[in-house]
Image (cartoon, rainbow, N blue to C red):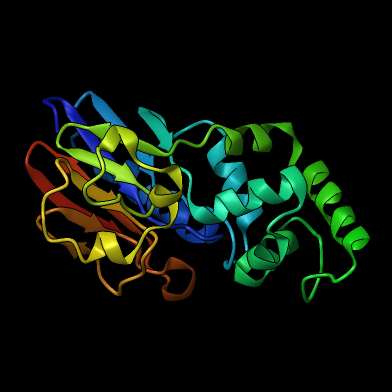
Length: 235
């Protein structure tokens, strides 16, 4: 990290606002114990789905950042699912079967299975758009594909080996797994990512994975980077 800069990178939240509140408290306590002038929060995406409180997570993140921090919000594949549903209704079935039903429920919209009737589905889409409100929709629209600081690149899922960083496909940044995870060579910067769950954070020479399956495990992970040091905060 550049001198005078500390970065707190937060893994996949997936509707666990309770864990996010606890982790924010840990981060604030950590920074109060002695931190440089420049503190950043980098959220790696997948704020919604699976957990019970997607609406509350979005409300929290769309509000003011923690005092003394600037914040960067990346786009995960689940967040992109929601945006696609709001835009034109698709791919609705894939989203709803992969946690979207929990997100709808957090907004007070109950459906046990993906509706087979297109008119019913369109009604759900319109009602969700209404309940989201302009501030939360604007938050989702502004999510970034990647963020670079010092020797690190932050993305949701990973990068495509052999492709210049400036030419990466946004789809890969949100979705890639095998080709990225199995690559032993350098990417240039060290890639900090979520998306692929592991019971503990994964440290490799070329990447650091911090998705610890918070929605099911109760363990939401934050990677703290300052100078050449790396450490972890977890719920």
